[in-house]
Length: 477
Image 1 (cartoon, rainbow, N blue to C red):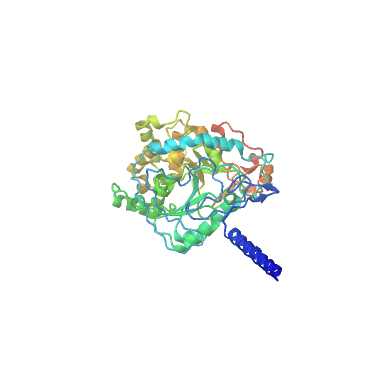
Image 2: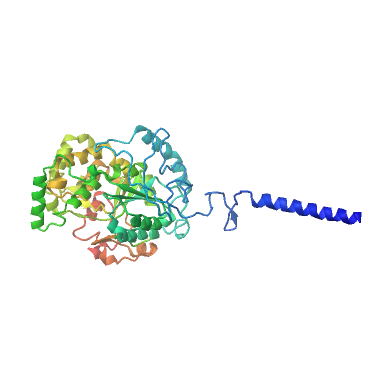
């Protein structure tokens, strides 16, 4: 009998021990090490680790996409107050505050010294990461055919930026899908949306659901979307009435003029944009016809480019009759800003006496925000702004950006993205070579390529930079 009791006690003790062990194991927190392709990956976010599509948490959790050593997206120096934004977490329907922190004054010069030093400090680390993980630039490069996995390599401190209205939601949704499907779903870059009116919940909900990176929504301050105090309102009104009679496109539009002025001098100075070094401008209803196998932001950063384009053409002269006069006055007053090895030959056929109307089409551009915030560019914009041509004529941001890039930058700092096939009504850039189109899985019609048509200025860019035109270009003239 005693033996039986001992046996029962032993069984009970074993059961209690087992239950206790099970309880502690099941309630412990631990991280598993994922197995990828039969190999143990580092965790979290190490080489080979599985990645989760980015959310809109605004930095409240580690980024889902690899950011690379030294990348400082959204970082704020410890001695500065973080800038406000109305980042929308994915799946959130909560109202958000559209207000932003203090607005930079219209006149600014270069970035603060501490920001510049910080950027310089990142260069070595970024270069090391880039050297370890080169981009696939040709079909023979490793990784070219892998368009499914999260792309390896460092991320630049960069964002997409879109100026849009609430009514543009479905047109910009189309553009986002183009960009995400052809490129950003593998990179997870942020997206900044700007509007002169508060974005509604529907716009935020739709766009946040489509963007793989973090979305931010900024309200443009009134002083960046209004007539400056020195503009003669009666004179400006008469100009609009005259242009309407002459049927000049957008000639009678006030909002279009505010847009051109804003894109020329203020988008890069919005508080949200101050967090970034590079931008990619995207407009509603654009198309991307080919896969993008590499990171255009890295191409710009690692090759020390400052501005890029895919389409160029001649400007409508009736919208800018005195723009070149104002530009020549600026060149005379600020010779220190004019680059020695500039692209004047892209702009003028007679050494700068007259403007040939060539410009880069700015609805697509990937470029340096630090350059746009530089003293040289700000001085140029402010000189134009004081002359009043945005309102007394109808100066566009495309010729303003183009003239600035051609004069203030070295010609090798301007880049042509031939393999980013692009459409914005009514023009198309489609790579000329058939093999390139096949390698990039393009679906554009080469007959629609605008590059070599008579109204395009891209041939001038090739000639200025000593670049051979691609075989077969004659068939597209």
